[in-house]
Image 1 (tube, rainbow, N blue to C red):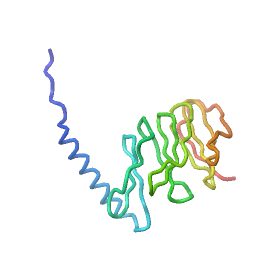
Image 2: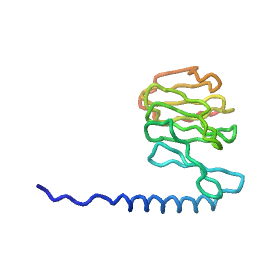
Image 3: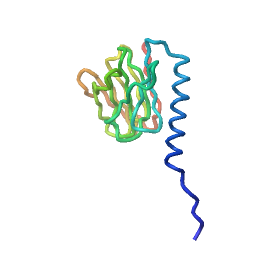
Image 4: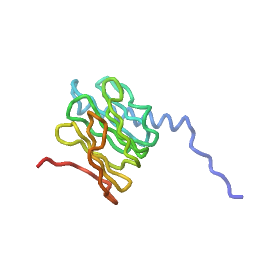
Length: 155
């Protein structure tokens, strides 16, 4: 048979990941004041919330597929994440608590926060939905084949 090349050393991968996290922390510190938090996500099912002192905590435990995107909510202290697992989640950034989980019914490729922050739009799997965050219900759904980017503009 063909010779097998050695796979990556798990210890080396952890060290590389730690080095990347430290580099990211330094870059964030260059741009963040003491009053701000920054959230980042990589190819994983979690989002890391950063403060001046370093990584504060992760928003984890709900997405079962990698996080596809992240947006700050206008209310402050809240973030919207979405994933190929079919969910969009509004989080309390400080505590990591889930404030609202929306089930799109298929992979969520993109999402947007509507002006005012009381509603969000999700798109993926050939459809889009506009959600009322107070009730967690889709107010409007419509076919949108091939949609992979959404943004909502006030009139």
